[in-house]
Length: 293
Image 1 (cartoon, one colour):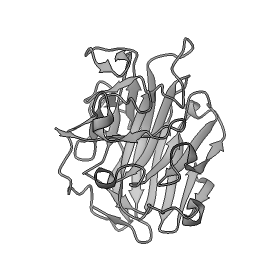
Image 2 (cartoon, helix red, strand yellow):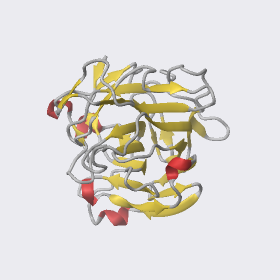
Image 3 (cartoon, rainbow, N blue to C red):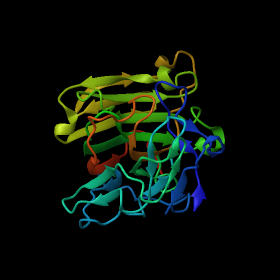
Image 4 (cartoon, rainbow, N blue to C red):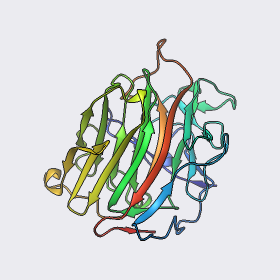
């Protein structure tokens, strides 16, 4: 088991990404492969990473592709404890990964606020798959309800050396439960992080009602976000306002379902549990100048 930082930020406070020493309970990486592990060779179609979650019902994730980050997250004031194994992240036998947030504390987990009230899961490819540039896409059905905070996002693989936000963060899809018709895409770097992050929002249907495809197309001089193939925002180095554009090196993938926090607020009496983030697939392909390992 290796120790990793807590690596997320809040829109309402300056950081959801911080070194482990700043946490009340450190996120631990479970089942991670060696830092130089390769996820997949490039195919003739340019696919560098692919997981279609075709395992039998109840099976855990492929630990050759993913590992768990466990613990709580005081920096965002989230309420969940991220667990490892299939209790909170398992196949449904129908080609989906289901990340489940539950109102429970079977392990007597201790969060920053006392005994934890919820469990969930957070999956990462850090040390297993990273890539600079290309097309990153997931087809997902998000949860619903006050306090739910699902995310599909990328972090710079040099975070251990330079910290956040210098490493860069690219949020492909975030939703907060009080905005059932809106998803967000954002980048964070030095001088444009937290509530000053650069990006946009896409308004549409109630996203929890069905599956939708969330993607970014990332090149050396631009990042574009799309929902179901509809591009809704593009950012370039010029948008950084003279600050350093740090989206020029490999990033890794994270999927998680947070419960509560500064941005979504905490669950209330209207929130029903369990809630699920259902992931049909995660696919990554190369783009101009793409490099992966």
